[in-house]
Image (cartoon, rainbow, N blue to C red):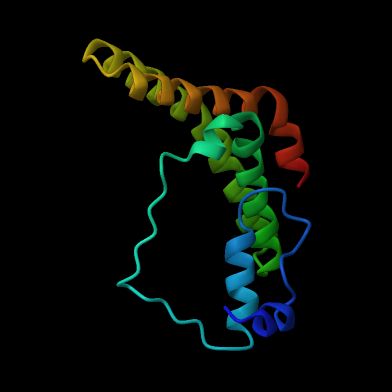
Length: 138
């Protein structure tokens, strides 16, 4: 986007640590100008390298970033409570799934994929054991 649009839309909201800031900026731009999506443009992410390398940071901050975004976008208290409950209840399911996936990938000869599954499980575990309080306080 042109710099003047970025500036007029409020720039990046520095209160986001990681996750949700792109949605917020799109919302801010969309309140002032038309947002155009080009379906022919493809963005290719190479294995989520940065978020996997810092899974203890990225996993909780994405969930908290969405809380900030939903609140800023005007979601009500009940909606935010429901989001927090669902994320909290889904975490053990995600850990179980990722551990099962890691075992399967190991058994089928895909050790690199198994390692990625274990990293994802570790991120959710970190969220549950170290960041859940901060998530609920957000």
